[in-house]
Amino acid sequence: MKGKAMLFLIMLVLAALLPFAAVKCSYSDVSNGNSASTSDTLSTESDKEEQNDSKLLCALVAAEYNEDYDSETVKAVAVILNNNYKVNPDSFNLDDTSQCLYEEDANNSVKENYSEIEETVNSVEEIKITCDEKSVYIPFSQTSNGHTYAGTENNYFVAVASPWDCFNSSCDENEECIGVSLNGIDILCKSGCNYKEALEWYLPLFNIA
Image (cartoon, rainbow, N blue to C red; front, side, top):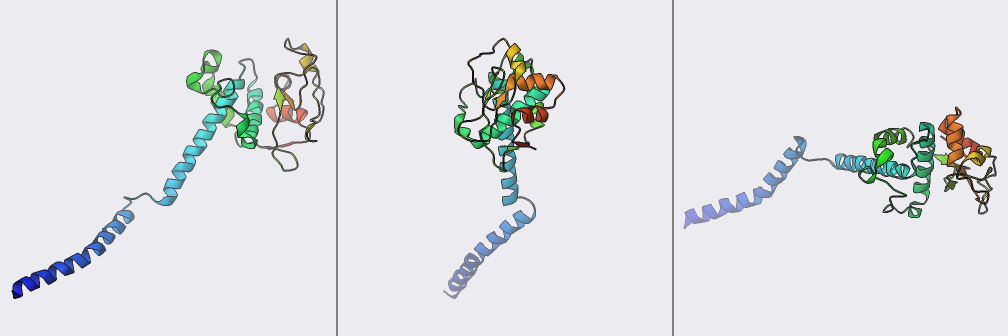
């Protein structure tokens, strides 16, 4: 009877020590690098988000891509679309390939040049457009009728000359272009301007950096 009592006491002691042993084992695993830290997990999630943002921006630019565009023009388009998506993401239909074209859905020249589009887009994805230190939606058109118009809703946009648009085959005398003419941007870039200088022509009140 005495022996059974001793055995029972030993089992109680072991049961009481077991949780402490488990905790010690857990701490040992962490110290040996067998457990990912919270900061590592957050870092990985942040990297994935950045990769997704870059891929999305490439898809937005690819939808507007023209194989005749100068590489500086592609940069300008990327800066505008990056700005606009961040200001008003709801204005984009990401299921519409005319607005968002991922590589797997692309064909012809867009498919052939997709890696070049990605490289160009990645080089300017940190560039921001602001006016009075504010980010606002930048309207754009493929071409204008020779000049752009001032915006009716705010004073961010001013009318500027865009005479080269008059020689574009798709020029429409009745078209109203507020903000940026992509054809005008391309002509300026092919004439020696970089993307920033071309954007500043159409957006003289804005800071691009």
